[in-house]
Amino acid sequence: MKYEIDACHACSKKHNNINSLNNCLVETEAAFSNTLSTNYLRSTNSAAKWNDCIVKKMSEMGRAPCNFQLNMSPVFAGDTHPFPARLDELKDKDKALEKALEDCKKSRYPNECKNNCHIDYDAVVYVSHVPDEGLLSAPLARGTYQCVTEPYEEPRKEPPLQTSLPLSPDFTLENIAKDKPVIFWIFFTISGIILSFVIVAFLYILISKKNNE
Image (spheres, helix red, strand yellow):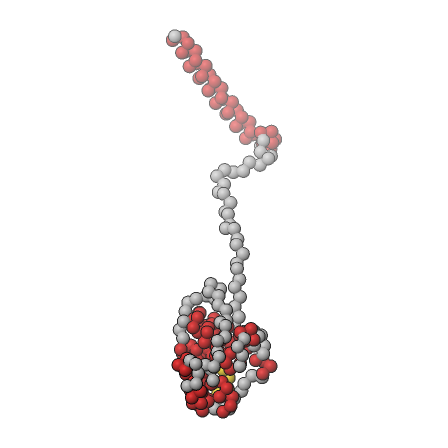
């Protein structure tokens, strides 16, 4: 029966910490890809699946990928992942798990090996259709995020409130006298009378003060 690898599902069952999840995702994908190279994983669909899982889990934790950027962990699979080879040999995940757990007895790290076997087992999902191999070698193509720095914009400055009416360059006594002569002469006459009264009053006060002295 055909199957696909869902490392995100398997690792999420075991790890709540984002860094531990990162390590688990990379090691599981590397084990099924039979590689110890993180660079190789970046060139395959494993990178897209890793990216989707990390972004999803960081979102669930309330973290933004742009504020807490994470890179793929280095690969330290070694002999602690015998399950993928057994699955490839036996074509049955239950039989493969049984044989892989026996292999773990010979591992330098038997407890870690058994734990990895159960994670690898959970990562195997039987499906009726598996994408073509050509699609699995595509570079990172989905679930990517892009951190965009918004350009800084100066706050908009409101124009100062106008407290007086602007004077037109044509606003002169000569122009007013030509456009509205009646108003001009009334205003001019009244202003002259008032100015004359002020001058007479000033002279009267000045003369009176001298006489009193």
